[in-house]
Amino acid sequence: MPDDTKSSGHQGVTTMTSAMLKALANPLRRRIVNELIRRRHARAADLAADLDVAANTLSFHLRVLADAGLIEPDPEHARDRRDRVWKPAELHALELGSPDHPIEDTAAGAAFVRLVMDEHADLLRRVASWTPEYTQGRDPVVRGTFQQRHARLTRAEFEKAMTRVDEVFREIEEAHDEADPASLFWQIDILAADETI
Image 1 (tube, rainbow, N blue to C red):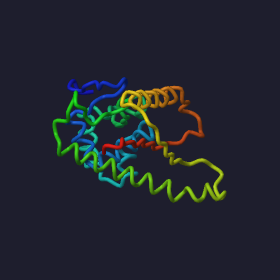
Image 2 (cartoon, helix red, strand yellow):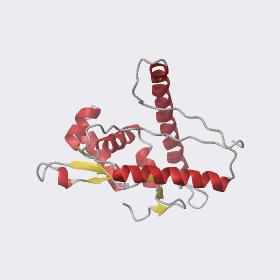
Image 3 (cartoon, rainbow, N blue to C red):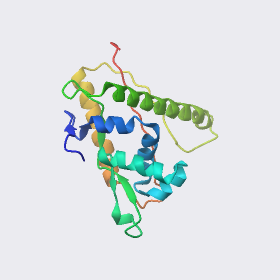
Image 4 (cartoon, one colour):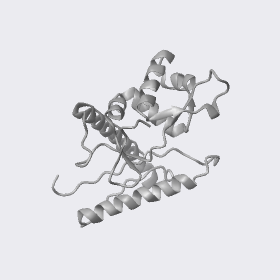
């Protein structure tokens, strides 16, 4: 991870560096990272084929992501010395910025936020299209959820709740058995706003 990575005020949360923001503001690089998170590790050749990207193009983007501290080589899963295998870096949670650690590159920050919002809208569309299947009894398997909760909290109480949610997910992920064949990749977005915005 780059030396300029800053720890956020939240436990286990890293404030994104300019290099991270610039790297993840690119849609292809975001797809690469998401695919590596889903798979846990992947050969560069397999990523290129699955993402339908030329190997030399993928190689460039992998290097940008590695230089930003978002992915790292995973020689343990390589077939031989020439085989390039990558895995996501050990970053539990990333924070865009905060008053204590404001973002340095506002354009990259804005591009990253737009990309995340597009992903969020896609996730919402997927859940909305599946929901009638579940609620009308055609699909008995829980494949997603959309929960809406309203609560009157202080800012400190809200931050405490979000910290506890992060801790629960981290604990469950650390206890997860990678070899379990029932293991699925879940995309989880938590969106909240107070009445002032």
